[in-house]
Image 1 (cartoon, one colour):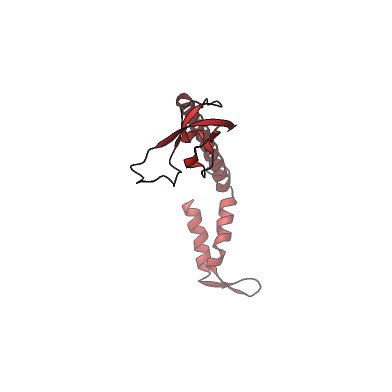
Image 2 (image 1 turned 90 degrees about the vertical axis):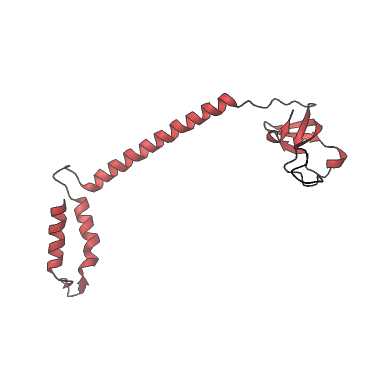
Length: 154
């Protein structure tokens, strides 16, 4: 491979730094290097019996397949870990719950000193699998009454 490239580049350099093509235009030999690269990469090689571009294509396809397989295995592993430790919330209408104060801005006092949860509040409606609507007290009447289950505690 190195000898072949050396031979090709020597022939290019034999023309000098510039050459005239068959139509009389003066060109720099460096502009022809992409054509040399294409010719080399698409020619059949004695070692592999096929062009290097096909070798690269096969290698790239194998790498993509391996990456896809690893991603699928990791996804399955993460799903199993999640399913082992995660329990779906089982709230019902009428349950008493505490609501996290993370999104509450109207609670007085320093953030470090305030309670993490307020309530208890009654669940009025289960809006979705992970969303509930609670009946807030007058103190929190300006707050939107719909919360994700990650923000409430039984």
